[in-house]
Amino acid sequence: MTPAEATAPIRDPRSLRPIPRLIFASRWLQLPLYLGLIVAQCVYVFLFLRELVHLVLHSPSVTEQQAMLIVLGLIDVVMISNLLIMVIVGGYETFVSRMQLNRHPDQPEWLSHVNASVLKIKLAMAIIGISSIHLLRTFIEAGSLGKPDSAYTEAGIMWQTIIHGLFILSAVGIAFVDRLSQSPNGKH
View (cartoon, rainbow, N blue to C red):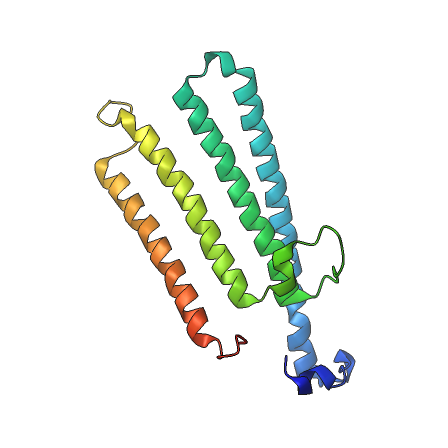
């Protein structure tokens, strides 16, 4: 924020002309989308608890490899849930309305400096993390490759690895473009 912006008077949105006011108010159309993501978050909590109960109740009969796959599934659910939180909280704060969480003891550290650019990089990193878990799970399950009941083919594993690599390259590209767009003093 420039010094002029910091000292500029706050403008009442009601003083806007009708079309700009309508356009500005249209940001609230995203609210049902964020509420829907909260419902999806509830579904992920249910899936997590179901898998956790399955692991605990069947632990005596579960092999180490099966336990590892279940735990990777739990980690996957947590990472997707984290991604949902970033999108819900960061997206709402960036695109809809300020949440006024200043000085709240539970305010996430990253929220104090969130903007569209930071959100894109955080989302890209979360997607890479999720993709990494899926790829690791594929590699573990691929040990049964060649068996008749294997769900993985060499081509499928290769494509999954290529797509993961493209996720990484995309994240590097996003970070590079973000860095190029920053002015020398570190501000956008």
